[in-house]
Amino acid sequence: MTDLEHQVFTQVRAIIGNEEQVIGRRGILIPLKKAIIADGDIRNVIDIVSSDPALAAHMLYRSNAAAAPCAAAIKNRSLKDALVRLGQINIYRYAFSFYLKERLDELPQLYKKLVTGYWTLTESIAVESVDSLHQMEGVNIDPDEVQTLALFSVFGEIVALTAFAYLNAESEQSLPLSIIKSIIDNHKQTLTLDAFEALDLDEELRQEFMIAHNLRQTRNTDSPGLILRRVLAMRNQLLKPL
Image (tube, rainbow, N blue to C red; front, side, top):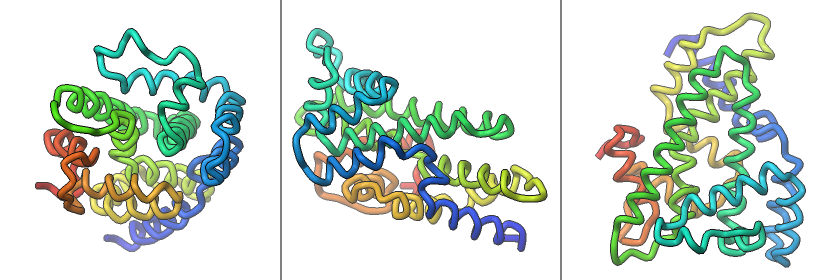
């Protein structure tokens, strides 16, 4: 690593530790997390989600996207039905990924191609993982857990790119994009684990992510991470190849 790459790497890791810089808008996520931690009335969660119509529509879309094809006739027709079925952990994961994508859409044009590529990859991995689950028999795995986990498949790369964009905007001299590409290629695991820790995502998501990327093993045959691991392996996206 060159001196400049080391400097940028250190600065990017510092920015990753500041969730406001990485995620941006926190007006919904903060009260949503508080309501979920309080484990109170689901109506409080519904009220918070419905205060942002775009997020509410996204929740309905995600909930129905994870449903098995044979369940088309009983798709959720109301936000309340969707949120009750999803469960609070999945609600927060979906909301987090929604606002992360919203933040990516705000990045300067310079980063648009990389951002679009990473998010297109993320969405395709999510679709393939859910489809793979529905083709299996004898498993007891929540498809929304598979989908929410898959939405964090390349989380480290996305967050690092967002942090680099923020760093570049604050720098007096523009930094070449090749630097962050090199850092991402060589330090994905460190950046990813930093991001999970700094952004305080739930422990179960972190552990299943580790399983999915072959960084941790499990004997639980109903692990969502094992479903995702197969997809990531076929796409050569594992942090630790098989």
